Length: 79
Ligand SMILES: [Zn+2]
Image 1 (cartoon, rainbow, N blue to C red):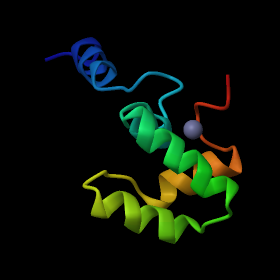
Image 2: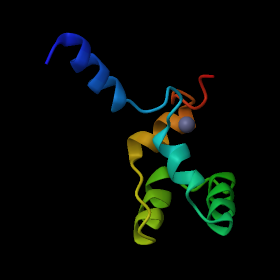
Image 3: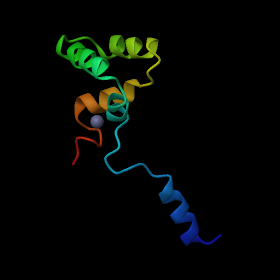
């Protein structure tokens, strides 16, 4: 396989430019859960508390994803 093929293959696995793990998780929540999550941030709950609540609901997320999104350094906010 040549380099061009390798590059093509690597590119296929790339996520969209503005892919954000947090946004991806959020977009897959039910409207009720989105509301609950929004309210949790407004109420000032810590990322750790929110993360463990998400996990107990079987929703996958990570501290890194949350931190990046909250700090505005994730890709979804860089449009
Ligand atoms: Zn984001």
